Image (cartoon, rainbow, N blue to C red; front, side, top):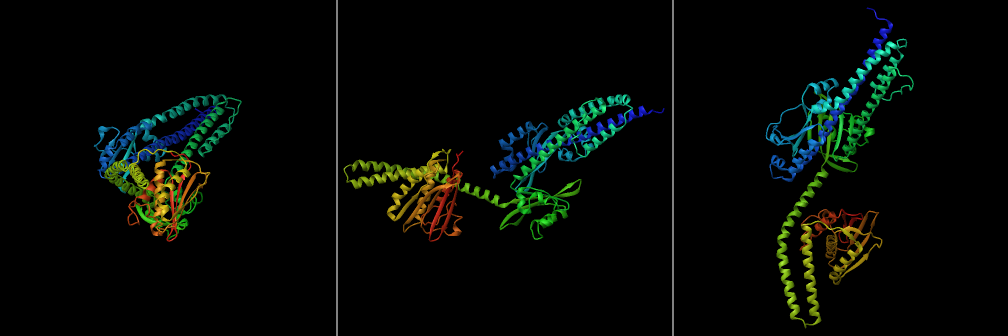
Length: 604
């Protein structure tokens, strides 16, 4: 049976309509399925990183315990695992397994201690082509896993696994799938009726629709507005395509927004990250790696690594070895010259493969300076903790004689009521000094075992004047002259006045002790910009050797024969507690200047 032109046009229009709707729907659904899977993976990786951070904290909090026991007993880690399931709409469970695959922690407690079952990778699902992804989602596994390796002291310890439900992923795609099928079901009859009624029209609208589909395929989602008049099915289909284009455009903008957000997050990392292609061309790096590369990201993208790093650069041969050998390495210690300074870094490089095909490499740069700073703070805190335990015992041995001395001093006052004025004055000085010593012991104990700090408005000039008056009464007779230069416009600050008084007293006492033959001691206050207050103490003492400047704040370090190495360590701690900083300049034989900078803003 031969079909007439009218029937042929109807068939052609119907088939074209079906192809247009089906193609655009498939494009939309394939893109949407990838976006849904990527969003699920992103949320799972975010939760996994939070669990990883808490796991490291739990192990660090109990360094002498078995890591498995430390993880099992950490309540915050348990709460984080339990709450993570409610955070993501796709998440079924979260677990931590050891290297052998045995479950250490699980959101379902009855599964702890059992072997962790194997599930397909969620990241592999994201990387599949659209057809394979749909086949996997609608006919494959019911659960997918996002996995994050867990390391201990640089060695593999286990893994963090998060199970994502394929059923929940399909539910998000179901609405769009139903919409696409509905669109197909509506568009086909309308197209057939329109073709039969408008067979005299040429196929120009069909070509126009084909052009719009091609624009969508090329990523040009802004389609022409349909005519306001007329109501044929071609215009209706054009309107549907325009709506679909807007949806695809919105999805694309969302993807770009997520990419920008990810780049912002990566730029906040202290560790440098560099992504390279298989040809060793720059794909991406964050701000921390910009110093190593030597150029901004915009200028370096696509450039060969060999053009950016000279052959003598220590990172270049390591990366070349990782790409050529196909095996990565971890924590290779190198020294990198950045401008006029040198940085010690740990370099790790990992090849990136897709279906066993080398795609490129990832280079991680960890600055050892920050690690050493943290280790130094840990050691310093440990020494303070040890000193706190020591002083809690010494306090009783010191306070008991002080109390006895005060009691007998009061008895002497009663018995020497008619004594000469010089004797009574001496007794008053003794009582004042005993009470001051008691306050010093109490303040020292309060510092070593600090309770909640009490911040209140503090006049720095008035506080410093009272401390100078106290020290001047003791040292003026030894040939030391005190000079004060206070800035009257100095703003008040928020501080714990007792702790700050103790710090200033220690600084002035040190300055006086450094001038055994007397001299001028100058105390100045001033402002540094709008946000800082400056306190400077300048002496004309013996000075400090350059090699000792970095040691003066260390606990127990002292150059005085009768010193205990605690005073400046206490000063340093108090200034830190006030979010301030302390600086020292010294020259042997000429004296020392100590400067304390404190924030003029409100303390928390």
